[in-house]
Length: 576
Image (cartoon, rainbow, N blue to C red; front, side, top):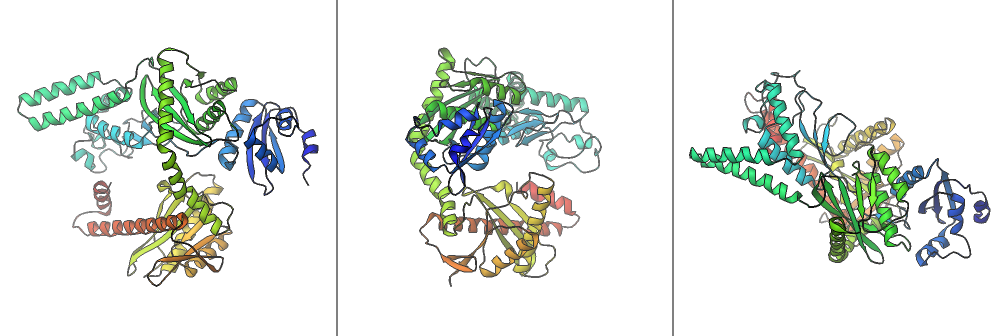
């Protein structure tokens, strides 16, 4: 039995992280300390003044453990990682893990490409961002193709010059086809220099050139061409207007402020890059036990910058927070250059922080009810399913379906839901290879075997791809038969994941769940049932879409003189 008073005597006076467990051995709080001995003992002193919520937490502590670190900065990093992994209920938590896309220019290549990038890799490419919207990145990439005609393909140049026909982007005048040698390396590099200027916000020269081309086309009575130049100019000006901000002096800054009520907080962040506001975003947090606004702000900074690849030169905060020296040291190491955390007291910077605070308050007021409804539909629905099946936690669900017409082009689909929302980046498609004819059970066995064999392989290789992460629950569209197929595959591979099936009535509507060899009724009015229905509809849609795609490709392949590769390119271009 864990004797708290005895264990308190053994605590070292060193920096580290402490972890509190309840009677169910669930982690309920993670914290860091300069001195573990002093910090952890404070929770159990009779003279403590912790506040109501933290007192409730202390009453639930059944045991604690600790990890010693070499420095306070190491303790901070470990604390962030443990909070993100375990999501303890008494820690201030970011409710959504957002990642921001970049634009990458592969300047190390002889014929550089301009690409959409989800992460900033440690390569020789030049990255711009992060951007707060994937849509904004795609709009910018489309505009860059129209303006500079640079390639986005994966061909190895100059090795593959002339080996294949030019792609469709060449024919619609959005690529100069360096793959055919139609443009010299020097001319192409000049276009890339233009792209770099554009992404750095230098539009003046480009706008002047477009204006001259527009006027020349107009004088030659080429009004459609002139209108195209006008539209390009308007698109560029719109981007420039969206980014304008005063008093930022061409530096990278994040402006951070919050608004809070008793249970929730909204943090508003303005992202300023090279003196321009490239976007803003807000984040919802669950407030920890009796946390002050400065503590909420501190926890946001730790969690947000632990997960984002880009660290600006300066953070401008709404109010003073603790541990600024440690945070600055940690952020400076991540950035590779000195990072400053400041609280502006006057001038334009103070007004920016005030504006961020007003935005946070507005979002909190407007979205409070909307957020609670959304949580009920997503996280709440997941909890209902977990409670119904008597599972400890269900965060990630995978569902599978088979689609075919009389056995023709049989395909399998896998959809993933995390925290009640579809995670489309982890969706997967399977073309059935080993099964002939319409045998859904055998097809499902093949799909599940391929999925989890690949997952085990990626785990051994420590690869962080979509297959490497296993679900908390597998949801089969069928009942007893489908569930048994899945359980057999998992048992054969030595994987322990609960499998649940859907039991249908005479009208093919779900009336209950099949789990552990029994039928469990589920009310159609619950959020859990509605989520199951959404997952069921989504896995059907995804499977049917893939089946149609293969059938369409088959029809294209039957076109005289069209190769399979050409058919694939034509299909992808017109269906992207």
